[in-house]
Amino acid sequence: MRKRRVIGPTAAVLGGAGLFIGAVAAWLVSRGNPGNMGLCIACFLRDIAGFFAGSVTNQAAVAYIRPEIIGIVLGAMGAAVATREFRPRGGSAPLVRFALGFAFMSAALIFLGCTVRAWLRLGGGDLTAMWGILGIVAGVLVGIVFLKRGFSLGRAAAVAKPLGWVLPALTGLLLVFALMAAFGTKPGFATLTPEDGRAVVPGEVVVKPDGDTLVVVKPEGATIVGGAVIAQDGSVLADAEAVAATKPMPGGRRAALAVSLLAGLAIGVVAQRTRFCSIGGIRDAILVNRYDLLFGVVGLLVGATVVNLLLGQYLLGFAGQPVAHNDAFGSFAAMGVATFSAMLLGGCPFRQVVMGAEGDSDSAVAVGGMLVGAGFTHWAGLASSPAGLAPNAWLALGVMLVLLVAVAVLGSRKTA
Image 1 (cartoon, helix red, strand yellow):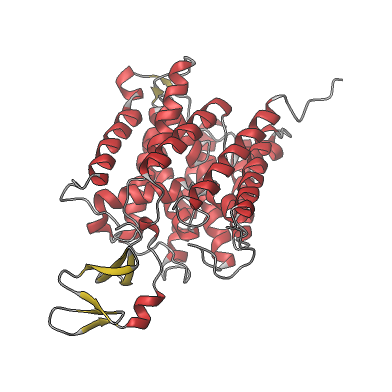
Image 2: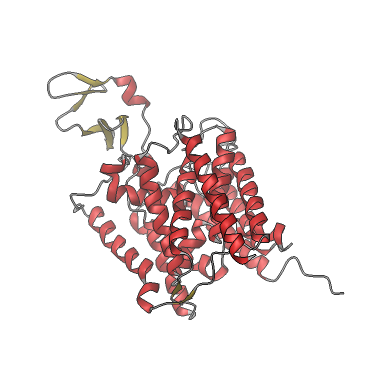
């Protein structure tokens, strides 16, 4: 009997794709993106949600249309159209997919990153990411249990062509808003985190650099005197020590729009052509003893690590890591729930974005669920911070896990 091949000819291609994506992500950090967040689908979709609803969802610190997402969608769409792989399709449990996207985002924001960023955090020396990566493995294992039981959301079918263009069309609209904001004509309803802005008193006192000095963005009329923030009536809103201790808000850390957009375009093309997925490699290795996709994840980690070392961005350890907390069990549980949701969706959020760009309206719906989930998670105060998990995070994770198991059980029975 012929032995089944466990490493196919696409392994090298996927490894190269991972190397490229990891290297570009680390390079984007050197160009201004938050530490270990050169590419994070969850964080970047959250920032986009903050731009449109930040005043309602308490996302003033994370509100910015990330050009990388725009680039990924347009790049993947262009590659799909050029190779005749753009196929409008859908109708496979869209409401369930919306809910799964919602759950993924909520859990990812408790971890503080998606399944891509978990590897990028480790590639930057962030050892707290290990707990999240163990959670990814656990989530894949749980998902495999239900896949073996016959879980399925059903097959997608051909749909009207306009439905396949939903995500690319909305992305084009995002580009218009991004350009408007970049040239100072932000719509009145929108929220935009000031570039390099620092929240001295969250929601009340915000400052930002202006050359070698700091200026007050909020509240209006306040000034910097002796390093302290002084209101118009002379009262001290924040002393000099508090101002000096602040760090740029995540939404205010960003590479130049053109740089981010071009990087996203290149990543989108590579991801579409190679079918890169941040959890598919682990799934395939365990489920079907196939390792091609795993080379992509290894490449992602190696590419990010090498570039971070070359650029002096590598910080090995558990303490002082950018936009990360050190709650080991919380990270494990949050990433486990997020990955379980992604397994039921059939791919990580990166893959969902790319598939949506290829004309898959079901994936577009899942991305919509992620956007709504981001706004809800911040509005409900469930998102973590570098200080740790929010008070009700464990309750939220428990509820999500119960609902995900219910979806998995019901989906398995339909095809048993």
